[in-house]
Image (tube, rainbow, N blue to C red; front, side):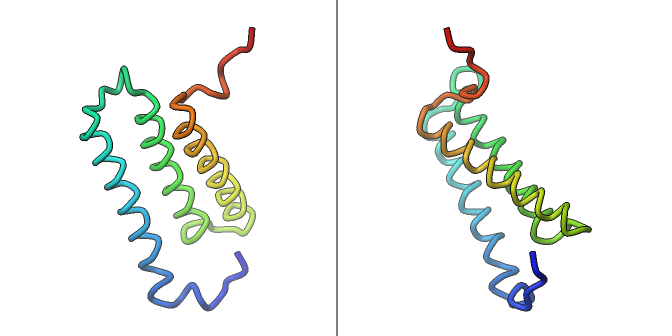
Length: 102
């Protein structure tokens, strides 16, 4: 967020791509392993879509955000998406914020 020179180093440019690749590969492997049906295993579909959103927001936060407020907003949104992904993984419920209590 502060324009650090460390972001110019090679590991800082390659690292996020490696992490994203591992995350996507493991998500696809899990979907294949449990014979995912998007209708019945909506929690895994929600995690994969959340992961893609997280990656996109990370790209905006780290590289493509034109202004500092845009980068900060993308970073905060990415943290919220990450929290959602973790909650879905733990509860296996993709609609955990949208369920009305009775």
